[in-house]
Amino acid sequence: MSTDTDGTRAESGAPAEGEVVADRFSTDEIFQRVLATGGEEISSPNRVLLLSGIAAGFAISLTFLAHAALSGATEGTEITPVDHLLYPVGFVYIVVGRYQLFTEQTVTPVSLVLTRLASVPALLRVWTVVLAANVAGVVGGVVFIAFGGVLDPPAVEAGLTFGEEALAKSPTSLFSRAVVAGAVVAGMVWVEHAARGSVTRFLVVYLFILVIPMVGLYHAVVATADATFLVVNGAATVGTVVIDFLLPVIAGNALGGVGLVAVLNYGQTEEAFPEAMRESPRLSWREWAGRVASTDPRATAEE
Image (cartoon, rainbow, N blue to C red; front, side):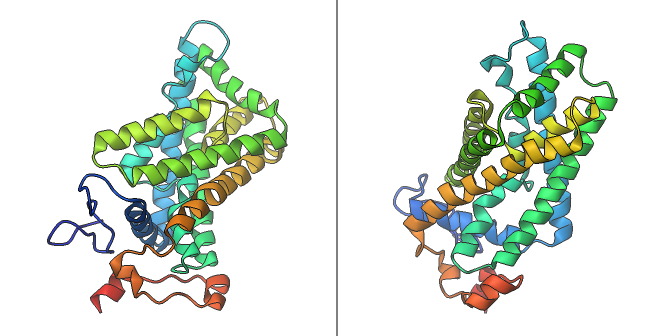
């Protein structure tokens, strides 16, 4: 988001600094920044979403690679908390690089849908393109890691352990864990919009994402990496990992992000639109439910 001449507002009207304390945003101001990001994402063409999503998928394959390598390098066969310290690396890459990750999409464009600045079909378009691109990127990355001999044998065993431990759990347990993980990622996105500076953003992303492996939660795109590694090593079938592992995790992430974070945060700030968005026409209920549509608050502000 570029800022205006006085440096306090982005083109969308979202604040570049806090009104009362310059380096601290209020809840309303955070919401305005989330809306501005959502506007950029939901108006992006499919080509941009696809390429950005594939890049994010490759980044998550780095999380799998680092996670497995560190786990294989530590002593013993059990997975310990130390083994998870490199798990957030792909997420840092994604957030700093501004790539599109499915679980992040449960906050920013959803906020636009809740305010009727974008339609449900528009949200589903973004979700579908980004999730498909994430899957393509992470599968390609993991297949290369598996067949390229990138991992040493102990790391291979550790990588297989990630997926095997997940398949040992019931779909209900996976779903519940994924709900919490979705809330964690969505909360990370919210707090990241309140952060100022690269170091603060790094710490926010690292600490939030580290919670996921530390407490045994599941992220949809990382789960896809784990599942792909099982399949290419002949440890599971595609049908098994999709039905028993990936579908519960994807559904849980979406519910956790939308239900527990986006809706609750929206409930606190539903009238706190950026100035450029306040006069933007809301979609009719028919448009909101029935066609791909969104408003462009920046265009409205210029008219």
